[in-house]
Amino acid sequence: MGRSPCCEKVGLKKGPWTPEEDQKLMDYIEKNGCGSWRALPTKAGLKRCGKSCRLRWINYLRPDIKRGKFSLQEEQTIIQLHALLGNRWSAIATHLANRTDNEIKNYWNTHLKKRLTKMGIDPNTHKPKSNIFGSANLSHMAQWEKARLEAEARLVRESKKQHQQIISNNNNNINNYNNIHFSPNNLTTTTTTNVLPPLQTKLPSPPCLDVLKAWQGGANWSIMPKITKDNFFDNPPISTSNLSLIMVPNNNSITGAGLIDNSCLIGTENFMENNINGISYSNYPNLNTIQGFTHLDHVLGSREEEDDNDNNDNTYWNTILKSCTSFVDGSSVF
DNA sequence: AACGGCCTCAACCGCTCGGAT
DNA sequence: AATCCGAGCGGTTGAGGCCGT
Image 1 (cartoon, rainbow, N blue to C red):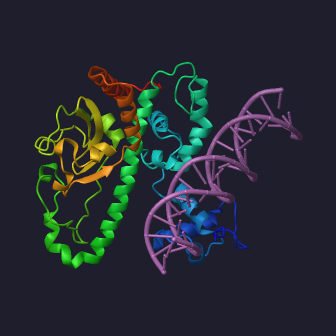
Image 2 (tube, rainbow, N blue to C red; image 1 turned 180 degrees about the horizontal axis):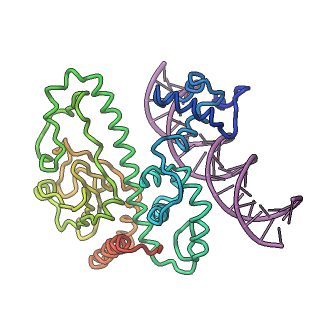
Image 3 (cartoon, rainbow, N blue to C red; image 1 turned 30 degrees about the vertical axis):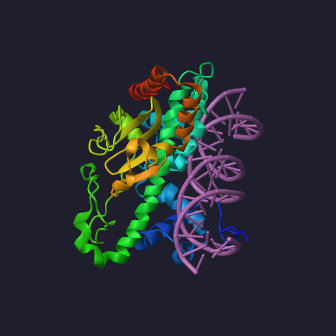
């Protein structure tokens, strides 16, 4: 059982890379592309393990890497994202163009962490050391972002499967390509199968579920007054971004929450149940439904237990929405 | 100039995850 | 189901540079 370390072989070099090694690696990737890192060193004539080659390429040699000083905007983005995501450097790096996770991690540890500490802000919690106000704000946003990341990961996996299926079914699917409908206007139509585009055609991108963009772009935060089978999918909330947040009252309390964009719905477990207010999701085969907000479920659950006052429910959610808005307008961190 | 402590960041290590067999 | 393997992630290390004395 277990696996041997990739650098166990005697004779493999470790430590700093020489310019000659860099050139060999770049030449090889330029000709053959990256991938199959384990086999790459032998083919490229390098006495390095594949892992070392991969890191060298990703963190240093890749041509699209942005190097040099971090801008103020980048610093602010890192701090805000760290407040949301914690030490998830790769997730943070996806929001900073051409910066590597390693670079961001190093910059956080050597600069930003210290700066926040000097400012009297706990770099782990992002709260002022003597003031806990605002913790709910970040906590809730972190839940949304966590759900988004979980959902995106699922969508990427689905997308990969789709691509593989596309390749294998390419010839059979050409005639069906135009039957794909991802528009919310088509949510009520029925399509018999998941129809896939031909290989030569531009593939559909996974739906964008970027909560951060939604906040920064001014998402439409909606509380559905009364959800019925007739009014929900036929009149989905309109948003300036691709994303809308939906709160679902049921029997005088909020029993679910969800995010919806053009083609995808993420919701709490009880939001996703087939029988809320009589909605049957099986009637909407083109809608990707994802259970994402498992953590928010706990929040909703605890609310119902400790408070059965309708007005307080509204106040509670209004507070959350205001917190999100104030975060967009001006972060409490700065 | 020499020394020692501190800082930076490229690179490594250990681990997890997902796909293939 | 068990195992192997490639890839990726986050934490840590240590060589080299910087700076104060």
